Each structure stands twice: as structure tokens, then as C-alpha cells.
Length: 178
Image: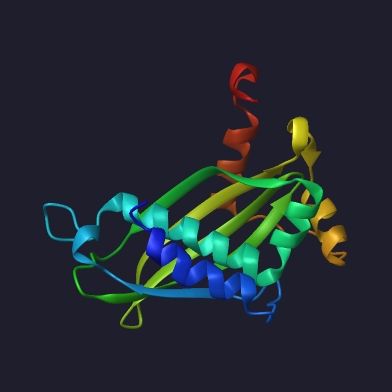
């Protein structure tokens, strides 16, 4: 609920604009640090970065038109892993943007980079692994998504820092796999 108004400001124009972007474009959302975003140390709290990557993903899904494909087929994106690296702190009322871009995919997994930029400098970076699930735990591959979108692409080589995240997910015990 704490990002509800930001959600409306980002998602509604993305969903209803009618202007679609390409899946491999860099998608940007802009915001500023509000007083409620800060921790007792006076900088944006670590958890807020993850909240902004969620908003960035919703923006990406809506602007590309993938949301229509997902809803039509009953698919839902699920974030499986995220790693954040912080380089600088942000404070109220600092403005920033989150740049979102896919970096690769494999099977049911798609990999994203979110870059937080303020004043022309990288503030933080997020590496994210997401996957799609269907109704009744149906396995959904990224190729199925691209087919639904009308794309036929070969997957790029996965960068090493994403490969380790992906391998860790695939090696999880069977009792947590579902």
C-alpha cells in the first residue's frame, strides 16, 4: 500500500497509453525519494529499491503489451531471485530513475537488470530472475511468451553473474520447487 499512488502514476499511463514499446528497449520510470522512503539513517531504505523494481517490472509488462498476452493465457510472472548492489545513498527529495532491460532468458526464466540512476550517476543495480507460471502450475517458457507476442528469437548468452543465480534456483531441493 505504501507505493499505491506511485503504482497508479506509473501503471495506468503504461497500460492505457496505446503506445507500445519493444521488449528489448530500456524502459524507464522516474520518481523521487519521499520522506516515507527513508530509514532512521536518513537515506532510502533498502527494501524500497525492491519495491521500485516491482513497479519497473509492471511498467515493462504493461508498456510492451506482454500483460495482454499473460492475461489472455492465464500466465503470471513470479520474481524468483533478486540481488541488489548499492553504490551511493539517496535522500529526500532526490530524484532518480529506474532503467529496466532484459538481459537474457532460458526455459521458463527471464533475466532483468534494473539500474537506479540519479544525477547521471549509477546509485544501485538489481539483477533479477523471474519466471512465468500458468494455471494449475503449467510450465510456461519464454519462447511461448515470444510466440504469443509474435517474436522468434534466439536466447543470448547469459552473463556469468546471472548464470550463478539461475543455477542456484535450478539446484533448489524438490520440496521447495513448487
